Amino acid sequence: MEKKPHKHGSFKNQMRQAASMASPQALANHLSVGTTDPKSYLSKIFPGQKLVQRAVHMNSGQGPSGMTNPLIGMKNLGDYILDAGWGSLGAWAGIKALYEASKSNGGKLAGFVADIASGGTYGIAHGAVGGVLSAIGPFVVMMVVALFFFGAT
Image 1 (cartoon, rainbow, N blue to C red):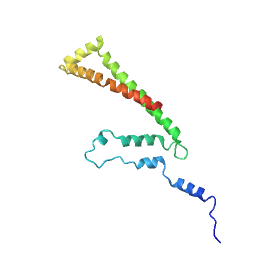
Image 2: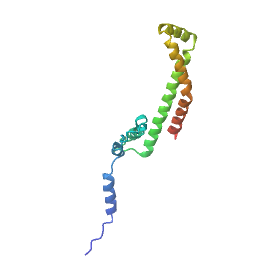
Image 3: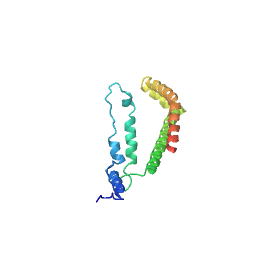
C-alpha cells in the first residue's frame, strides 16, 4: 500500500524553512565592508557599505520577535533622514550666523584685537573661512534639500 503525502506537508516545510532563514540583523552582519583591491580609494573615502549596514541595523530588532515590519522600518529610516536634514540645516545656519556676526561692529573690534594678537593670521583665517563658506554654500543647500526629499519619500 502506497502512502499518500500529507496534505499539510508543504505548510510544515514552509514553516521549517522560515524558521531556518536568517533575520535582517544576521544578514546585515555578513555584509562585506572591506576591499581587497589596493587601488580602491573610493571605499576608504566613502564607506557606502558601512552606511547601508548601519541603516539596516537601525531598523532591525525592534519588534517582539526581533524583526521589524518593513513598512515601519522604512518609516523610521525616513524619520532618521529627516532628522539628519534638520540637524544639518541648523548647523549650517549656526555657522553662517557666527560668520556674519563677526562682520558686525563688535565682531570687527574683536577681530582687530585678535589680528594684532596673532600677528595678522586671524585676518587671513577669517578671509579663508568666508571663501570656503561661500564656495560650499550651494552644495550644502543641495544636500540638505536632498535629505528632506529622501526622508519624506
